[in-house]
Length: 229
Image (cartoon, rainbow, N blue to C red; front, side, top):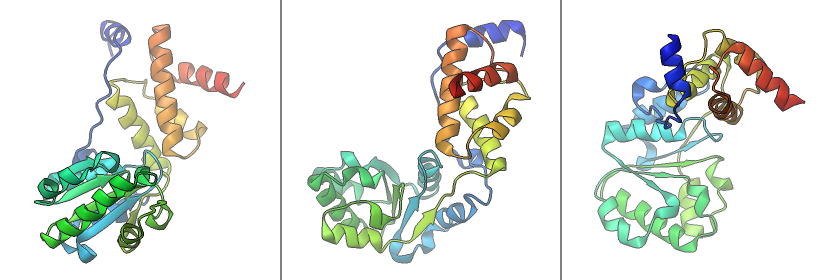
């Protein structure tokens, strides 16, 4: 990157624009089975699938991959109301973050009716959550039983290969260009988790902007040492 372009990058608080296309989804042993299940959606058992995994593991990304293939609409579980159901049930639906409605009886009732009507209309359903459906804390027994009867596609914490790609994607989503030796260094230093990678990139973005400095290995090393102190 030229000094001029570097200066322009550092002078702007650029928006985060996650890349959510199929070509942006890097496949390793941590997510290959989940991706295969998503791409095989016409053959889902009972027409539904639950994607589970740690925060930041790619559940939303896979929901968008499936929506692009199936024409599904994507909705947040906590925003569901009964008035939404007739319209949503006319096609495939992805419902994200189902555990977030554990304390919301109305949203649970809405999801229960969406589940039944969508499948009755011959369309598919995809759900996302961090843990297995039996741990989603749903208080509506009929909904809980239907979620627990859903095939799951599990995403694991990243291996080194996926962590390398994940860091690159997180920087790219923020329109940041670290020096080539920065990401390999970070992979050796941080916990193997999506949460750790996301938090680190957010911190480096904020510090780089505040100090008007590019993201280099030396800058990243100084930041990590300051966090450990």
